[in-house]
Length: 310
Image 1 (spheres, one colour):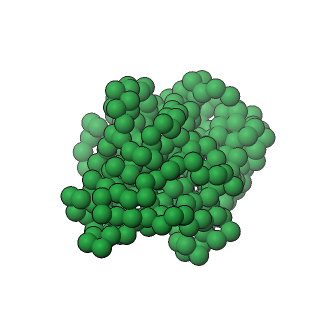
Image 2: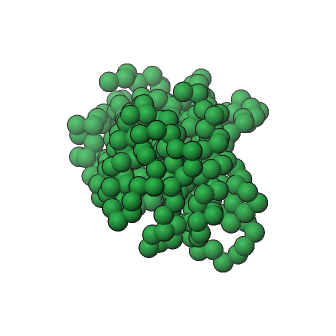
Image 3: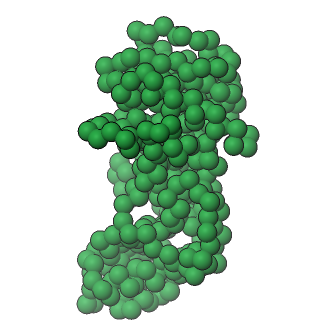
């Protein structure tokens, strides 16, 4: 277990914390948060430190410090919900311009809750009742937590996503999520009660919708999924598993043991979907209105895979 390195102040305003935090690991996380523990274990979770700041005149402030294995894992937790007001917790962060695909946000605040991605740390600071004083305390604690920490870039896999596809489709960066677990995938887009894509801690996956910017009235957005496996063999095995489970009534249109030159497109009950294997990357699109849009979204994003470093 990683040792904690953040020295939170003993007091902040009228609030005071205990001398030591509560330590939560993967062995006892369900005692702390019931079913929500699956979300954190779905990433590469090391441990959690919990501090409760108490005040005689205000409701409590809860500080949760999630220590993850990598910055990508901490980013993934923040990316599951982009809601809230973006806040900058350091002058350096405000001044630095980043060439990013996602929303380029490292902290979000809303209704007393501050969520932070800072290097390999994901933090939640929650005032049980929002007041001007509690907001000031929460943001001040956030600045302490992020002080002198590195700010690595977003996961490299995001670089493969096309911001625009053709003249019709625009990527919804505010809905882009990074994950490694099928349980997390199901919280974003329900696919199956089984792990039909063979996702685990060795995989990286990003999902985001595209919206039609030229035609109104579209109630569904194509959902684009990109998964990176350890090697092409695992990617191929995952595609076979996915097709046999999700599309059992459809014959495979291409051999799946090599990188395909063109996507395989299928008409299913909910519209059109397709997939394409490219080395150790598997791309899938769901909920397309027609065959052409499925082909175009896959083709342009597969062409973008050359931007990734293997």
